[in-house]
Image 1 (tube, rainbow, N blue to C red):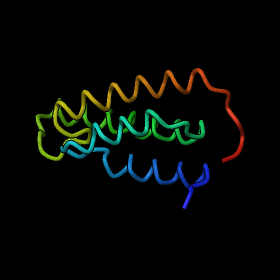
Image 2 (spheres, rainbow, N blue to C red; image 1 turned 30 degrees about the vertical axis):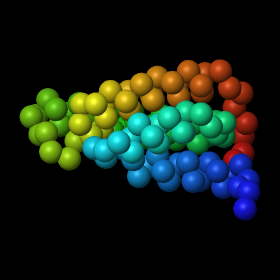
Image 3 (cartoon, rainbow, N blue to C red; image 1 turned 60 degrees about the horizontal axis):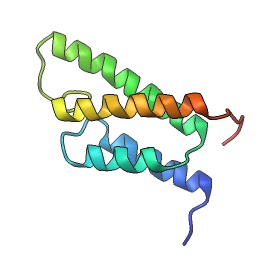
Length: 101
């Protein structure tokens, strides 16, 4: 079964949301796969927004010394999410913005 563009975007977003905040190898795997896909710009923007929100919560948790269940995971996971954020922002900046998904 081949996936259409909307199905691929949905599947990619679900995998992304599953991985966000995890402290496991899956973070890097999902980031690598999602970065390689040509997603709809609105999906890319939703992912950027989600990581931004998680970063704010993660920064606050670290400032307060709460190091359990970190919103971006462990330090290595956080580093990967911040790299993902930079790459997705670059991707979004270079793509035209269609109006529908």
